Image (cartoon, rainbow, N blue to C red; front, top):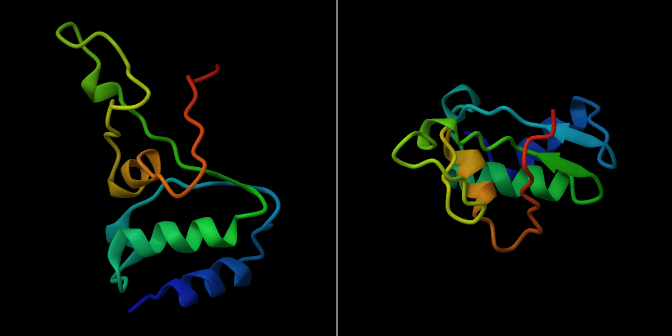
Length: 102
């Protein structure tokens, strides 16, 4: 079972630059069992990348349609999993949500 500490160790073993940019497309199912679940994964990523830039795309396309044509930064939920949704709503972290820039 993964822990916050073991996840951080794996990030370090992968030689991911703590001061660089880490773009995460995630799947909790692919990560496997984690003590504390998605909150622990997000905590590990955030702690490891505290001197860099952590990016989790929060795609919202499935919620924007003719009946709901507007995107709301604060409340339009992510449609790609629990980690981006937790990240989007994080209050402990400084989370910057931007419009997609082509």
